[in-house]
Length: 389
Image (tube, rainbow, N blue to C red):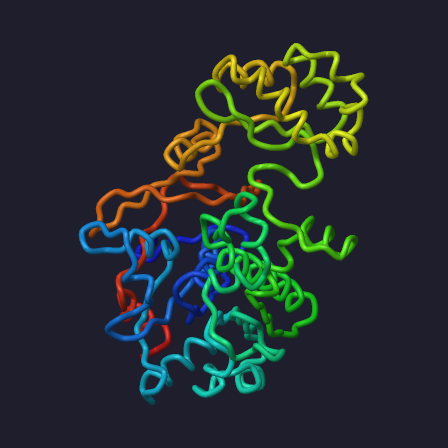
């Protein structure tokens, strides 16, 4: 903390100020990553209610732990952008900011008088980032969207789950998180472009676009065959063996991603004959005989535990891993070694653990603690003082 009580920010984005009028997840996840990289994020919220995410559980002592996880280390000021006095404050914030981030439906900021066409002439150095359901162009531009809507529309749900089962949502908000990450990438590119040219730009991110961009192999299978792929459960569509296999006490993932790894696996599992078996000699033929190979692999794996086979495959040099539940994942020793579980000491909730920053950059500290998420309007006095009000 500095002498004035403000957080001392370090990181490659130290000195960058972000005015964040986004809410819930896509925009706030983007600005969380910017804050983790050292930017100052001033969260502009609706008076009285604030960000909708403040009202999503789980709660600790009445404060949303969900909100904490996405908005830690930010500042909050409540402004009604339909009232003249608060608009004047917002204008002063924009005048001193490097970036403004919003994730409203296209047209909302324009109705408020804060669209790119208005802001760019007024604040020529201000980068504008918009994350919306379908972006700022196209026939679906003004449609509302939530994470699950774009998961469905973008095709990801159609390839998730097991064959013959109903469409399955991915177990985290990949629609929001994906667009938040792409928005952050766009913003960082825009900041670099501004540094090189002096020109500020608009970053326009559509959640639907991001879902398409994440389809990778599934899209290419469609483009090359004309047939839409379906769900495959816990296996890779074109690499074999590359899936979850049953052991005597659970499951293990084996990812033999090339012929060399397959041969190592065959030796490790005591089946060197597989290496010369015409059904398994190369990845293309293994893919044709995927079910036959799975039966033979599981006949061996079911004779002992996941832990035993993990040890065997580690010695053999074959990529493998258990299927952890969330508790096992966050308590896995590698997570602690990489500082991926950090502490927040919030005056309302008390000490709380949150997920750390996966971006490790040499020369910049990765502290074991983080500043808490702000209470609604918590930083109003400090912010107003800074802008001379």
